[in-house]
Image 1 (tube, rainbow, N blue to C red):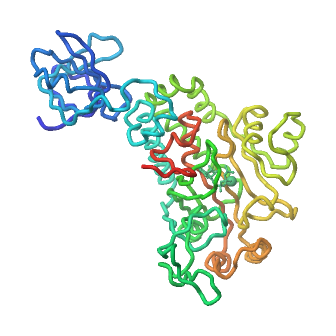
Image 2 (image 1 turned 180 degrees about the vertical axis):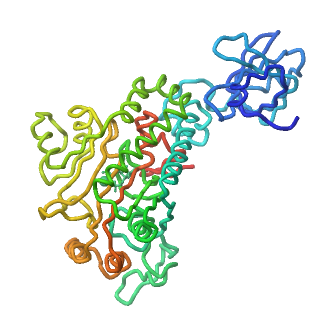
Image 3 (image 1 turned 60 degrees about the horizontal axis):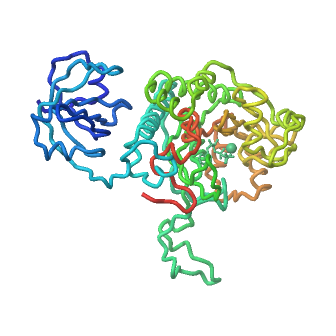
Length: 462
Ligand code: ATP
Ligand code: MN
């Protein structure tokens, strides 16, 4: 027998009496002179399989080395378990120690703080908590591809290195191969990017949207799903310097179609988690957030509130609530304002639309009032903004004038303007922060805990 069976399959198996080969990492070992119980986990499920070993059948030295954190391979027989709460266990015939772990293994006992686990991010995937989160992360990535594929969207790859920095000047990571000690200079003393790798000043992308629009204007409906980078020095529980974003972009969609897609897709992802990640969700609910499944179900079962920004601001002004940041028409909403609308006022997810043009990007469709643009932000409980999107300005002149007004270089962006010069069409799109979605689905409170290796200001470890 050479084929290993994953623990998730073994636990679901009814074939008692059958031989099995199982491999994994030891969570605990306990027992006495007559019997040893090893709880083994291989990452395929939150649940451990119990290995039962008769100490008389095994070398004493071997059993001594089966410690928390060690990796072993066990051949044995699947038997009904007399212990409550587990259907089957493995009666060991042979045990091989694949890799020992001495008592310096940092995950000896249970109950480490999330802060401590961040310091050992290379080992934390072996904990129950991170095993659950990372399996859910995988399931959500799969659900995203499944959803858009079913709808006939094309998976589109926007570049990660970009020469356009109009989205968020000042908050981008520069990409260069120039010698920082001794960069080449132009005659007037500026750094000469003509000598850089791409012969121009380049950055890591903050969003795949602009190139995504080019895709939508050819393929109809596309989505990106890839890493994006923001050098914003905001140390919050909701911001990463490197995060993953899902950005659908659709020709012939207006803002209403865009909102419908945002609401439908997010409900699909949450329902996928409820249907496919039950064990992991139950664990997280028990350990961290006793309202988790209720909150997830609530989102899948209720219509989102749709409301213009102007009315949202009025509600906030009338609330009588003391906010840390000021509220007023023309000011951007902070997370505390968004959460007030969602958690206290409506008690439902909210889609806010028609924001003042001054606080939104140049490419958003201008409303006839001359003051607002057809933006939409989806606001969620505990998170605040989970999606930001808009109908795009499809009119060449309006777009061009707005770019000039906002100081966006129209020369270097001529490729973008070309979509409006040649066969322009109404189109819309949005960006869903993948880790924000995971914060919601897992109930975790800090975005550093839903990605294997978080990148944040002053931290790029591992
Ligand atoms: P926020 O106001 O929360 O900083 P934003 O308005 O800058 O977000 P957008 O540019 O609209 O965000 O990006 C689209 C989505 O990407 C957001 O709705 C959010 O889900 C996610 N997102 C934005 N910035 C970050 C970040 N630094 N880390 C993780 N996710 C982010
Ligand atoms: Mn936004």
